[in-house]
Image (cartoon, rainbow, N blue to C red; front, side):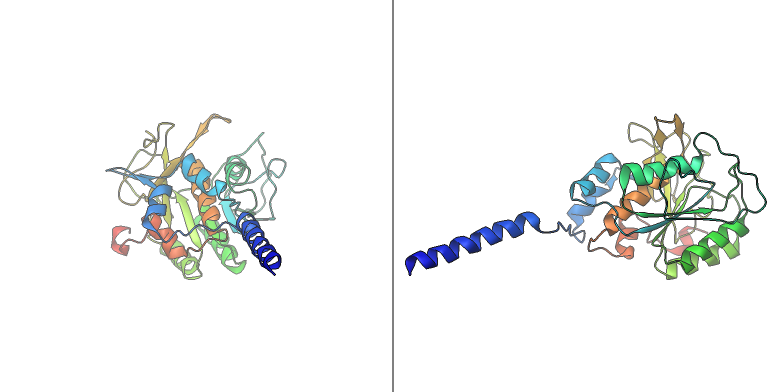
Length: 276
């Protein structure tokens, strides 16, 4: 009888150890300690960097199943695998460089940070990186209709447009996280859609985790992220956006965190009066 009891205890211990090593890792992001570990701050700005990303990747997060729409220019599938491509640019001869603005952003997002996301290329800019608010709104509407989780805007417009804001508000009501470039004008002047209160505005860091000289700054910028891409010798707030989007995809990958909690982490739950 004693042998049987000891055998049962031994089996229970083995099963417990096996469960410990095979259990899916979950990170509780409700604690303020974990949040502070992921987004850093000093007296003047908040930022995330490679350490923030590595923390989540070390927990086994890959962004699996998170649907991200990148509203941008043409994306070359020779470099990045996409789930679907859609374009609102009509009658254009595609001018494909070796590697485009959108393609670099997609590589940062999918190759370097969140490899298992579902990436949707939504073309609202032409090959020169120029577009209209009308096509941008079409891209947002398409994202809403296709149940996208995160929209990336690596683009800026200088003028406030009520119709664009209404589209952004609708996406927000549909529980879509939106992330936008804060602009490369070294200015406090707001750009859109980043300056809308529903959107997380991302500025750029240099290699020393300082606000880059070219990056916009000021009250409407929520968080800064790396903006330099040495591999292609390019820089800009456009390339800080995929860092933030990939980070959020890792957060949303089977973790117990809501969109409101994510926005709170990024300092985006502000009074609407703080942004036009």
